[in-house]
Image (cartoon, rainbow, N blue to C red; front, side, top):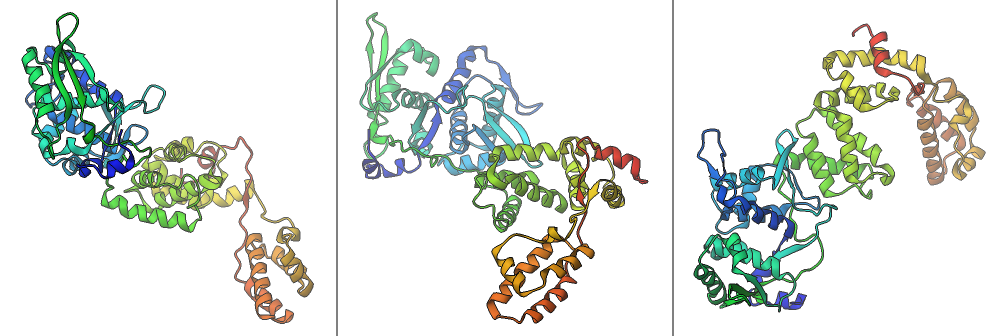
Length: 490
């Protein structure tokens, strides 16, 4: 096997730059669709279009399968994409790509044979699932590392039978670079659909004798022999000089490009989460941000703000994985209508009185006209605060925070009197404590007179917000029922 230095110094250096990591299980599933080759079942890409053979592998199928392997994620999925975007990546990957009609026919064939399935994951994009990519236990399992020569013009011009045998041979060779392999022609008849031994012999000879690049053939060994029963067999060995060496890591995968509208939204999400100090959380990853951006694209401003705030709350302390957070967000939002109304309930503080499931509450309110629901929230909030709210402070102790700094400031200023004033005026305790912390910094920096600093504090207290009642509903409180009974707008 070539080591890293040898790979870098290969006589065909270009072929080692972008190897393609291909699931062996998916490769086998692709070839297995030809088990019904002789039945000549057809499928149609259009309602009145011409029929195409559903169980015949074509060059377009090989190109589509290879492209999917290049861009699939670790879960065996391509997310927030569409068929046009996949075809554009195929065109960029191959020097001689199949045309658009051939690509769409291959895509439909893959769906017909359950190699892939699709589902919408945003208003404009789909998720593509590769069903045979992972093993049943969820691991990748065995894989084949193909050289990027399979995307070259030269390889694309080879007959389909030659291409299929090379794909098959690389899969069998694996990392046994020096081993000579054998297979009976009876098995190759099913793979290549050639019944005459002379045809298969010609494929072996062509691949082993014709220079592919820089005088190097695709096979180092390729000949026909007879087995112990006198039947023909293929003896072959893939040319190791053209094969890349495997280096562990995720660098074999590439991400699908993101649509322009999603890119703009992605920048906004990055800025918001950075400002919120979330960049060190384990869920803060490019893949998560991409999926979140596509999820909220095209939604209202209130909807977007609600999702960003909810992600920030869920992500505190990294209790959830990125995938878990996405599922929570999706289930809570229900759909666009419920999400918009949940955002209004959040912005008006009504949602803080919810004790049950956001999912169920969202389903209950999503049919209320948006303007009406906004007025309902404003109308019932005072009733909620009066019935199920508790004061933010019960006395002056709620305006006191144990700290060395404030103890020092207490010796110079009459903070107790200020706390009495703050409590009588129902000022927000958190805002008052922040103000006293600012006073300490000023006192330390410019040695202000205690009387001047005291006057400054009294003056700044006039700018502090009043407290809001803290929600404290009983555990069995039904917010939607409260809306129905207390609002005059329902």
